[in-house]
Length: 491
Image (cartoon, rainbow, N blue to C red; front, top):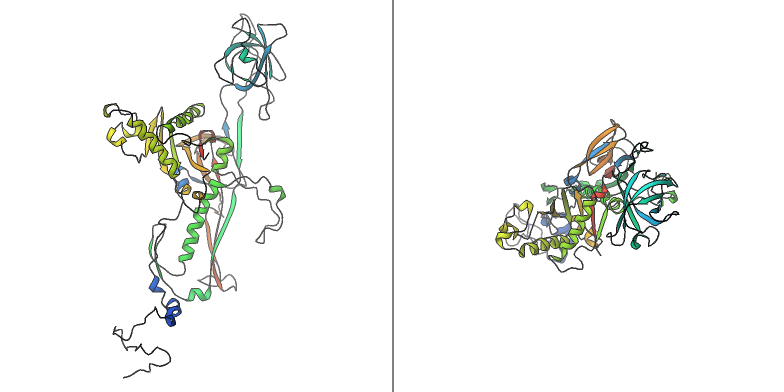
């Protein structure tokens, strides 16, 4: 049997009737005449996908520190307790009209202050200067004016007001430490009502899709993959759908971290890309970074000006002192960029290096093991009365996310739960400090919707010759007790 070797094949190719490899029946795909042929008909030549970026997803942060709960409204509203004691940091002192020991204390009323101050006649107060905090005096409140923001007081100490306390408007601070009344006097006038601070957030609607034409779906081309969600094997054209889904799942978390309220919602126009917007305003949402910057603690330039190592300890101690003024939550989690994580490692290693092996520094979670302290990859440590658990946050390192900029160095998140008042339930409930609320009801769950439209792949919803995989979610992040969070920012 012979073959016609002209026309369809080059003269060097002699096809064999069976799958037998001989010297003249293989195709040299380096030849120009076969380059396009090999790419079109033999995709299995490139079936093994190289994972040159490793695990590309950046999700998991919220799964580690929070929870997800349904909601049915356009807003989620929660109330948080205010401080128990009464203090003001914008106080001016002057001698009263009757001369010393009569003193007038004027509190500058801010926009957020209630109509009436919480100070009452008979209260005893301590006043200190804001410049140093070292100069103090103690006063008894004898009369009130301007809804309690102007105080007539009696000075207990000295023959004159300390000069450091009469330097100008808003230059002092005061707090109430008790009360004092003479024998046979009437009781305290007025009562204090606890004031709750109310916060709210609105969910955002997120969408994405993957689309493939019917012709491409009919061309079977396999590719061997190991996906970021832990599966491996061969995928057909849905390889791209898998990546679209993973990307959307990352967006669900990234949006909760990065979202900001839309200050220009009222100017939102009617021509918004896809049809169906109907000129509706987009109000945005308050993400993690925005919530901390507005209601939490921001520390810029951690260890930036100090030499690597123990120099960072002073910065960290400043953060601890501020935590003492907040909720003083003992356990906290640090999610850091690579450079900041190394700063922490150097800081702890430098502290340990100053002690003999028999005088190991207090590493808390390491049980003061001197040998273990030599491991510079610390996962946890103790300083003062606080425990910290440290980990790298891939989102801050990835070259396609926050690794592009140097604005955010990390975030400190309190561990555990907090008690808040639920206005819908009418009672106090416990919730994780961070949790996601998504829209859901008995008939509609918008946590993570996925559906197929078109006329390919088993869908017959339109005459469009495509298979379209649609993704949708509607959600927002609740950041409770943001005053206990710390955002590390670059200097």
